Length: 440
Image 1 (cartoon, helix red, strand yellow):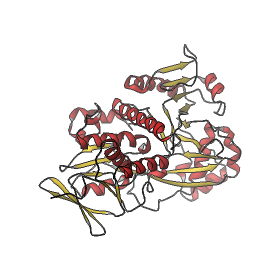
Image 2 (cartoon, rainbow, N blue to C red; image 1 turned 60 degrees about the vertical axis):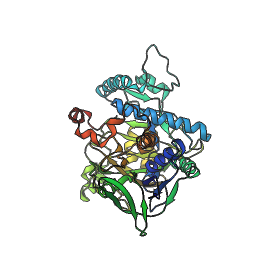
Image 3 (cartoon, rainbow, N blue to C red; image 1 turned 135 degrees about the vertical axis):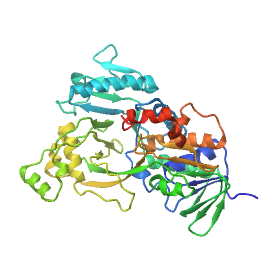
Image 4 (cartoon, rainbow, N blue to C red; image 1 turned 45 degrees about the vertical axis):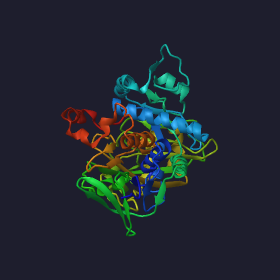
């Protein structure tokens, strides 16, 4: 009996589009169908920070990210940089000597995993425009090369193989090539996945149609758990609400050539007595005590753009994904206050926030913050999910890895560490607690 599709990809976000692209354009699988009730790249993929880095605390993630960045750079050449890839780096800044010392230790570890050379300044290596590795900057070097950073900072770690790009344009470019290679989009919601004798047989859609197939890729983003359950697969995923805000920087405070700037210390926001009282009255004492690390931001757009993006996950609320998103009306002011700690030039905006736009999405993640990529459950069922906050940066490598599993192409040495079956390996389970958040 003939099939309607060789592969059905559930989800047209960046994960699904990348998988369809690699299956069709790179591995010549011709009958690929992507099913999603929404337009491609519109649910969570277009709400990301749109950044990338190869800076991770374990060898598997460094390997996967290096592969993904290799592919991004390859597609940059093929497309004439249609998605505006830039590599200005990440700058992790601290005012705590102990944190700066820990950054140095983390740099040495990540370097051994393949993240590149560690250069300490002042030292034997001149500070320049390195393409890889990390630079550890003391206070004098930080002030010399990044004068917009507060004088209270004692140092910074600058990741070089890092930057940002337009996720929408990357996705559009991959989707165009996928369509040209035969990929078909179906605007419908998946309501069921057929399984007989342990083998995938079909995908049922809400318009009443059925797609016969023996291979399904579940790339449903925040809905991954519920969609995988249709195939009786239980995924260990949770979703965190994450918001971002784009500010119009009419004072031109944020340098247009800056990379991602990240405050690596906890902080207490400065509220007036009146503001503190008002916050207490509305039950927002969560904003008056110590706030968590990693308030961060970056320029948005090209050299002439007046915008920058700010982000701060100060709650990390675990919730079931719902739309519209539950927004915090104080988020823009809180983020601006947090960024001003690192970048004092933003202080005038505290007297009146500039024009801004708030949106966001969900970080759907595993406990140790590694994605799930590869086969699991019934024969022919594959997952590409659990992308947390690194979806656009990992999508190219993840789509490539998923396509390799499906087509029986050679697999990289890190592939087993992204399978659902990793949780059945005692030696892997012993490492999860030591991994912490799984993120630098």
